[in-house]
Image 1 (cartoon, rainbow, N blue to C red):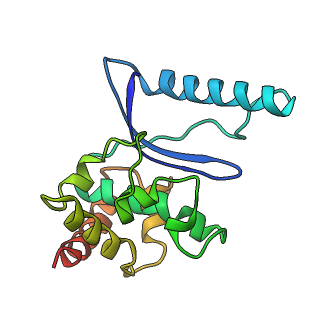
Image 2: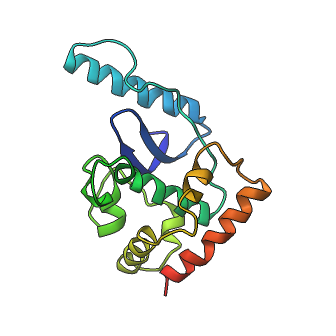
Length: 173
């Protein structure tokens, strides 16, 4: 395998991944392989043709632990935001149970940002769960940081990210 999968959430029209490429393999190659293999298998089973997901992939680089935890939270909360479930751990096509409840998932290599929360699994899971259910000062903040409204590294991006850091620190208490 030429990547480490840290998180995933499959939805009806799109998919979210947090991954790290390995062995000098570029992200476009990883995404091509994932999309190609998935659509091939799905199309064979359901006797159809063509792409499975409607849009090309969109990627952002995770440069620090705060942003990593924002991305992880956003990914897990996506089915809730879409009105599909009331709690992220109820969505069966996601790794939320691994992070929120410590449930085994052989596909997942824990996100380094998550590992930085505490030294042991139980404490990490408890802190992440508390962070997952923490209200943000601005409901649009998470969407703006993840979506295309703020460029990673811009002054506006960094200011918003700095507003989130204390919330993560509070989850550790």
